[in-house]
Image 1 (cartoon, rainbow, N blue to C red):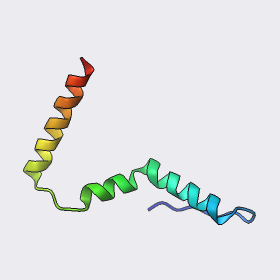
Image 2: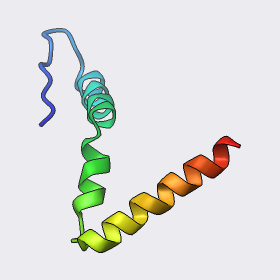
Image 3: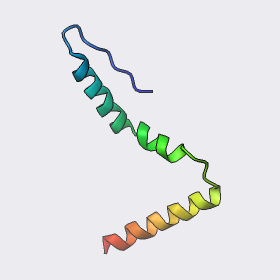
Length: 60
């Protein structure tokens, strides 16, 4: 869970901006979207394999 402390002279907008940036860098939203729906292990393996194949193909 991402957590920030709001300073005395810091506006709420700046604190919210820092919080959103921290969530993006920690991968919270990406993980949430990934786990939003259950994915069978076989489907997960297939996606991982396809992603590796795509990355390997794009290198050449």
